[in-house]
Length: 179
Image 1 (cartoon, one colour):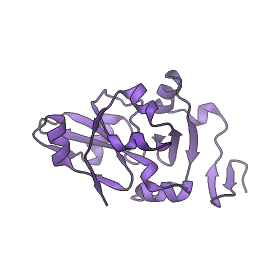
Image 2 (tube, rainbow, N blue to C red):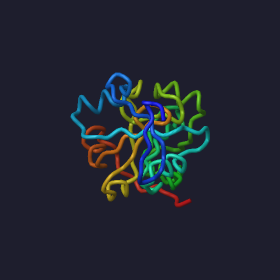
Image 3 (cartoon, rainbow, N blue to C red):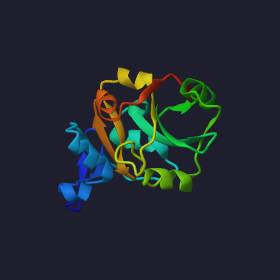
């Protein structure tokens, strides 16, 4: 096996071994380091349209603990970030009501890229290009550990969910629809 790849004996998955700080540094990890957040790197082979199912299988953990970062817009095209369990959908109607907006919908990929500075599939709530309001599904805080995008496709970071609250101060909402 090449030097940069390693096999996890528990899951039999192959991960990229990113030993150098420069290789794993993204705007997201830069913000995490500056905020002194304890996190671990997790690399997996990215699959187009694979979503959180692929990453959770690669990590050998529950999809519910993988938090997806969604870029959405309100009726005035103002962007916002929604953090949701990987195995759930967002009730945009409930989100609009709880956020005090008339309507909220998912952005087109190119618009989401422009707002966040990340490619879709590699979007992190940390280190975004623009400051945007952040809404987080409240039940995420019930998990002991979460996996969230580290700012690159095929790259997640794990941390305590309380760190998201400490660093990003999101508005907690109850808008999850179980798949």
